Length: 459
Ligand SMILES: Cc1cc2nc3c(=O)[nH]c(=O)nc-3n(C[C@H](O)[C@H](O)[C@H](O)COP(=O)(O)OP(=O)(O)OC[C@H]3O[C@@H](n4cnc5c(N)ncnc54)[C@H](O)[C@@H]3O)c2cc1C
Image 1: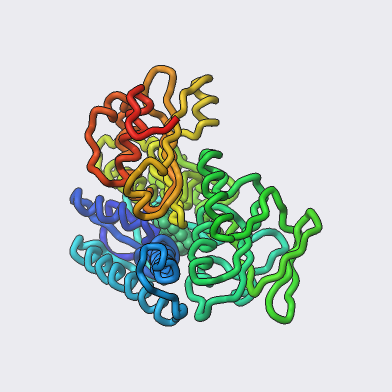
Image 2: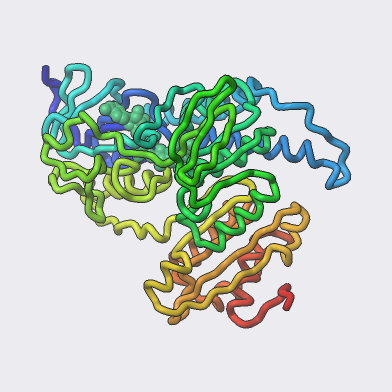
């Protein structure tokens, strides 16, 4: 059965970060938009990703403060973690944002269709037996938690982040397979809740996509927090035991715990959705696009975790906006992916923008680096956090990489992003007076030092 109406300007398959951002921008630009979602608008980020994980991490921070109050002369102790209470706090945050988002969909007069869609031609999507025709189609079906060959996720002892966000108890111990962003965030939150955590990472470092110096600082902090990790260790198998699981590594080691969290990355949701049949070029399930998120089929674009760019909600937002503007006939600039900020919200946080030292050396040959230790930053001392700001400067002057480790440094990345994206030189930033005492001063002081006029720097 065909929808009786004339084609929409834009039909969007998937209402996650990428899809709904495109819908909002397109409707702002006067386009007639259909947004198709099989589950809940907001997608992974709102319901199973960014927001609930950060709520868990915040609950963890509160637990740590209660446990460590004496450090600040405050007599506190941690009576325990009430997982029902944590979950209702987390779910309350999600529910409020979900309601707000549903309100925005209505207010923007977007035609919202609930149901599982399938691309049936370069200009049509079928949902619930109904065909929606669009002058342009945006694929935004997102991603799912991957596992390893032969590693079966049972949802109770072997789980993914989807299950981990809804645990009704605090496990005594957990093994986390994968030391990337998601693995490190769960390790941090669970440790704060009192879980005995061990991370297994096949590569030589935690958060392996970050600058090696940042990874090493995180490892040092995790060691201090007694979060265990096995680096350069490959998983070889898992067995159920009476109380949980026994994980074996290729190096012969065996580790037991109550559960195993599989956090080895996310794969694109594209199987059986008609993309290939409609002529869209794909690679291992990812939809291939150019710098404007256009596929090889002129009427089809794709954004978010479905395409092989950084799997981040704000990247999805940016790509969605880009596609909406392109479809509306504007002339948006392609995204510089190196200029997108990246944050791991563990304790301590890891935040970066621009190139790592290794990437910068590859591009420029020799580079200058400067590391400013948070030991010299008053606010960081007040918070009792350790870490550093590392700058990477290209030979012709601009700062091309900023890497930070420490509590709350994620909030500093917005300034770092301006420095990188506006190609600022050390002197430009050094001349800006930063407020005292803030952690942002560490960024200012690092640039003062790089410009040859260090202030609070020893040695
Ligand atoms: C545990 C975790 C923590 C994360 N933390 C962060 C963070 O702190 N910051 C950050 O930037 N990113 C974070 N991310 C990543 C972020 O969630 C994703 O990058 C983002 O959600 C991708 O948006 P998307 O629109 O591409 O896909 P999704 O958000 O996955 O949305 C895709 C939508 O499409 C729908 N869909 C799929 N198939 C169909 C179909 N056939 N018909 C109709 N609808 C369909 C799905 O139901 C879904 O709602 C996290 C992810 C996880 C898993």
